[in-house]
Image (tube, rainbow, N blue to C red; front, side):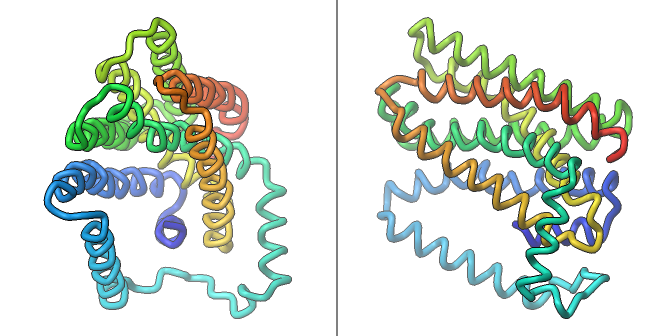
Length: 285
């Protein structure tokens, strides 16, 4: 994933790279759209060992395709890039850049909301609501469809209304969706629709924000794209891992902890968009 983001920065300037990344993420989202559905069906006829076997075959195919068809995109090779001093210097330089953190924090907030759903939805759909595994697979696929829709919106609207306005609108919509989910959970009404309808709004916003934020974090660093993508990926996934741990610890047999976490993160996302993105987006655009 880090290499893929760095390759996009190698080949495209930031504004065009956001549209390319959105298109790529739209195609990539087809896999998680159908993956949970197919996997849940596969578990009806095989075990988890069969799923891991499938993962191994897919990884082998990825290795073959990368070896055979992926050309080198780095136009600024640095023989010293792997030295400890060079690595530390690159990370310190990137970490001292305000524009990097503006979009890195926005990306972490929307990614945290996604990880909340990934970590909590299996328990909510199957344990709390009592649906079978194939229903969870279909529900996850439906939420992923919202992500695909968001990538389409990004490609179509960013050239029209601009990055800053689009991100602020998307973050505001995400917060409203998260608060709606929390409101439904607080009423005690637990249903699949009460989970998926607000989550669709969160996922559409995630499709808009995620691609833009990932490209914007590495946009100012054309000769350090790999280091910027790696640092962004580290902080984003570290935050996602902590959120996943929290969802597991806080689960109380209802959808309330997950809904409250998503509402808090999407509200934080809106605050960051209205402050940091508003300040840095004009220069990035």
